[in-house]
Length: 79
Image 1: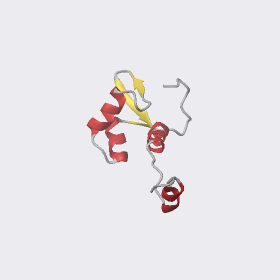
Image 2: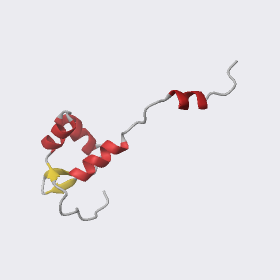
Image 3: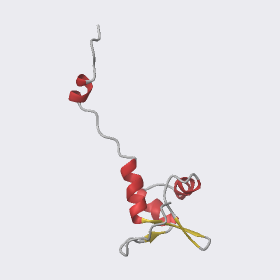
Image 4: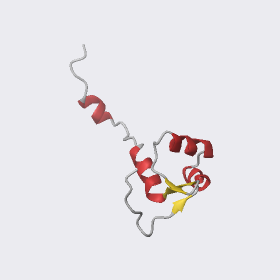
């Protein structure tokens, strides 16, 4: 966690709301928090996830599609 202040427009989401945004289970979000795989904020004993942290997590998991050009470009002299 960076410790930097949140931008004023960055809303804090509950674990339940974050799970709903990602169309996943609450358990998955809690596992991400427990494994420190997503940035979160502690408000007392409550865990909150900022919208920007959720967007960063999604962006980090983005995988580019495979194209035929990239497949053929990486092949080398297969006999």
